Image 1 (cartoon, helix red, strand yellow):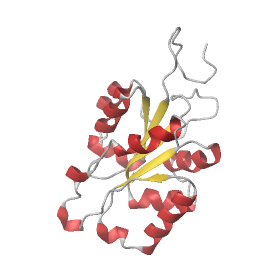
Image 2 (tube, helix red, strand yellow; image 1 turned 180 degrees about the vertical axis):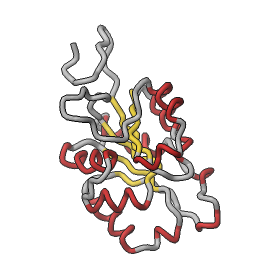
Image 3 (tube, one colour; image 1 turned 30 degrees about the vertical axis):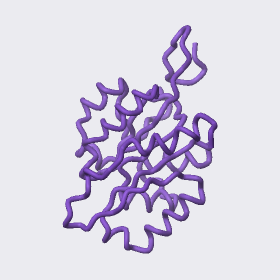
Length: 190
């Protein structure tokens, strides 16, 4: 038996690293399956943690079928089994202005942000792909939050915020960048 809660036994096979994909409520969240597919193609096992608002942006049944795990969005009760294995790495994509600022400030008011806050203390490699408009990015709290996250060792993607009227730049969002940032960390090539 595996010593990690929730990990299925795979006799004769090495366990795949487990990636949490934290999905926030952004217009492109419905495309999170692109990151899941890319991760699975690179031999990651994947589970999704969504902010409560993100649940309205994604096809829950399709994501659960793709990963084989339930989407986590709320805390479990004491004594309930862990629905996901422990994370080897975390990708936050898309990451909204709200989640980035709450995470950097240590405001753990949702399961998703709580997991991100604990990841720092647990030493779990974490990458974030911001997805916000340039009006939000101009707010001083956003730059301060990115600086704090960088100081915590969080890997930050290169997405350029768009003007609010520009439609969000979904065609420019590089889901696979999260894996490009995390792979050297997880494989020890930092």
